[in-house]
View 1: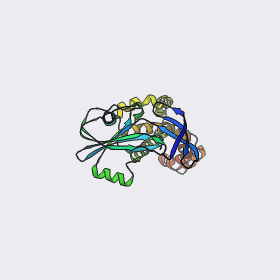
View 2: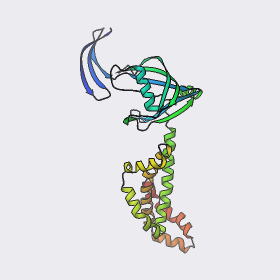
View 3: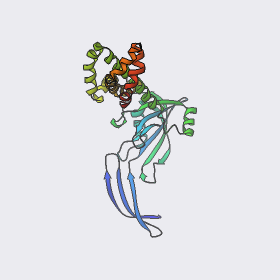
View 4: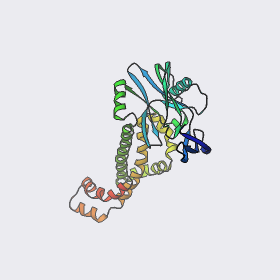
Length: 286
């Protein structure tokens, strides 16, 4: 071997991996250190049914974005049968059971700094059986594509990153939250009955942590995109209501009197005087 290990020490360990630092000597006599991440074997599965391939979308913390990928994972246990591991990961992440699991080969994952073997399987004859994700896989979304679409994803890189869906959910919730917040805030300023009816509820809901509201949103909207839109909406709408209300209440009364003296209607005064004056408050909430 061209590199010899002189000594090794474990630097860090958690339930999923360990990090060691080795003192090494190269065959030219130079010495150095090598950091190595040790992980147990994992499996990656290519699930195909007819002309359809099943994919997983999830948030990957290391790259801080959602990634579209093949089902994969490991069990952090040595001496696991690769096919058993592959079948288990397929069931956990996609809820599918395969009649046939063909072993395609083995890859080394990021072997420049990590020691982890990845077993590759082709899964066919798929039937649904219900998902069983790990706690760390709370945001998995099952996707499908045709074989032609999958090949195009490999070519254009979208298999590694497909954040547009999440971006749409973010923008949708944001726009709805801004529109609703401004409308409700303006109504609370214009009509005392609306203010008296909503103020207590808005204060209570705004003070409630989003975690407490999440189960209700899931019951109402399910696990699809609308529940994520609702989360963004709630995060935006309450600050927008409060700031819109504060902005409209702080408008210089002299400006309103001038607008009315020029026979400005209530709506025109609101649009041309009150709303522009309150804009700094509204934008500060976004």
